[in-house]
Image 1 (cartoon, one colour):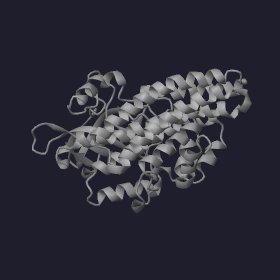
Image 2 (image 1 turned 135 degrees about the horizontal axis):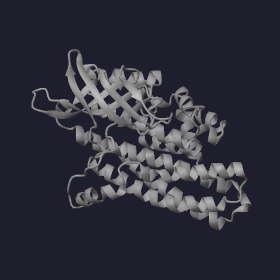
Image 3 (image 1 turned 60 degrees about the vertical axis):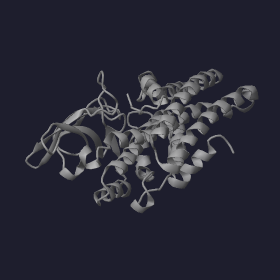
Image 4 (image 1 turned 180 degrees about the vertical axis):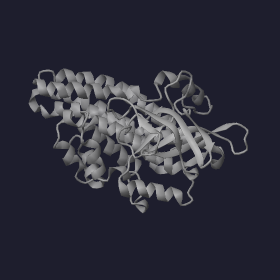
Length: 369
């Protein structure tokens, strides 16, 4: 099987026509400010990728989704990263919204209407964890009203819905508790700042939210943190796949040089990047076999940090081997190299997880720093 053939075949099966549409557009156009990638993703049914077929989705497994993200990353890294946020949001919605009819209606609506969901939980604040809510809810005459800011880490400009972490008043009046709110992007008081990128700041200014779209910790028997922490395995897995795709685009360019690069250079690149993908596939199979529990999240972090190290070796060597290309191709190589090195920028940073992982290895609970 040729390099990346399996991943692109998965896209062809689940999102027909998307790979061909992306391939027809130049890399730099796909990565530009008016990139068509998001709309091509919508048109192919991408928002329903991980939604079960019973809810009009594509029914992708975690292994399928990993392969799709790698394939997208090889064509348009920014699209892969942005859509990872959507898939993680969908997995979180499915885990957290009570299955009382509202869950089915929301999830089915996302899939059938090709709507995009962004995730905003923690602002970058000193001393706060990545899963610490950054916004607050107050009780208004017509229901909860939310204020605050967050960064979605993708889809800020294109989102239809925002899944946001908030601190909400307890029903018994004894303080606050974490909650999750689903906010339509067109709601009055929602604004997106920045210069057109998909990860800029989102501000909510006294935004009214229907009571049924605010899920409190108490309604989940106190399991909000546990469910979010476990679901975070999806984020680590699919983000890892996205960056393996960006690095894979460089490796693919090396392979396409045929006899210009000796086998002694090609094979080590393949061994390292395919070994990294195999490790990620192991995590995906664990999710598919039993759902993302705490140990699966730990494994997803081990693999994610291992892949970061692998890419730190693969990417520079691939760039060096491609160093004689013309200026247009060199621009693409430089962009892909910068993209492929971005995995380390996503939460949680390895240095912040040193203590939590050390505690977990001696039988403590796993927390996300």
